[in-house]
Image (tube, rainbow, N blue to C red; front, side, top):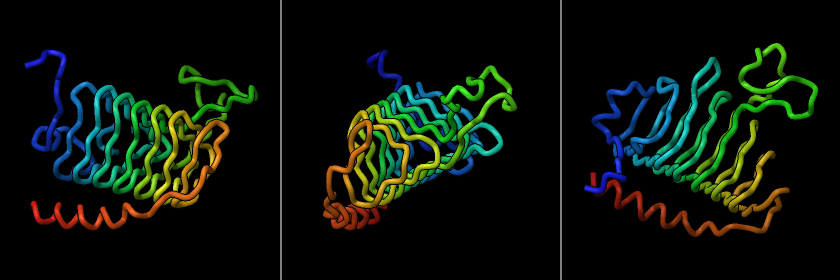
Length: 198
């Protein structure tokens, strides 16, 4: 056994941890940092890779992962304002989702050491609809909905809603063009095979 490969928690262990809800065939790397388990719902066939940090603690915090979702290594999900990642979507390595952020204008104080009354927190739900893929080291800010079938290229900054079946890239973010919907046929084939295996 390779001592550097610490492995994954699987269904039976994960059921004892206190998640809000947990589907089948879930794998979470043993070196993730996850806070607020009672506010996290996970669907079926989900993988969360090494060194991810997921924070879903606080009054308005919640995270909902659909089925067939992959979270790549070194991702950070701050779910204080709510985050939903729907079926067949995924985050490449190092993606950051911030549903809560400080005000960078200089009109208020910032950082976690300061009481809320001295800050102007920007907070709002992030939604990734079905078949969304976010490229490595991209950042998603609060109050953003990424519609069905969107691809966001690596190193992009997303601060506005994105329209379905398009490809976006960059900082500032630009629409590069339409995305093929051919994957929907592959989805039907996959789901039939998935059901047959049960």
